[in-house]
Image (cartoon, rainbow, N blue to C red; front, side, top):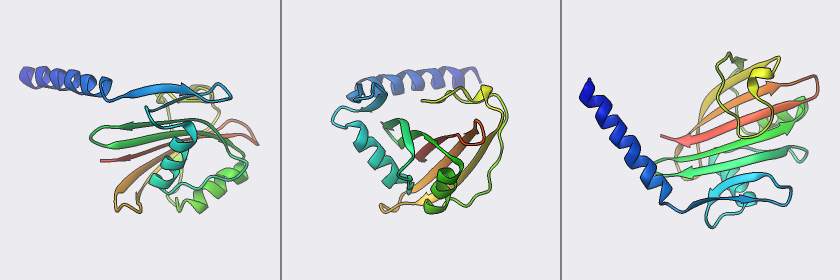
Length: 161
């Protein structure tokens, strides 16, 4: 067991070194929202890549608060979106996400944008799998913060395994 912990620590250190040397950076768009991207990508590119990668369809009134991507052994995207109940329902339908949402409870993960989930009166979550145009199986995690009657903060995580 002790050897497994030591190996796991060395593996973590190695992965962190690889991630630190792969050319990732942080850029800021015109509204001063930070987007963690690959060196050559712009925020709009990350949003476009993420939605294409995960089969996510955003409504015109949806506001993307932040978007991130990480690429190493697996590909991973995160989106934080502000919308209303109709926009959220449309996102689910047009993205083919039909897994029922269930109540989520603390502890919550750290969000990339929007209010802390711990302060929300209602948090729901769901997960499904999506086969994208590159024939990759993408896991799609959706967490929705039902902040009030008209505000939904939607946190989407997309990744291959």
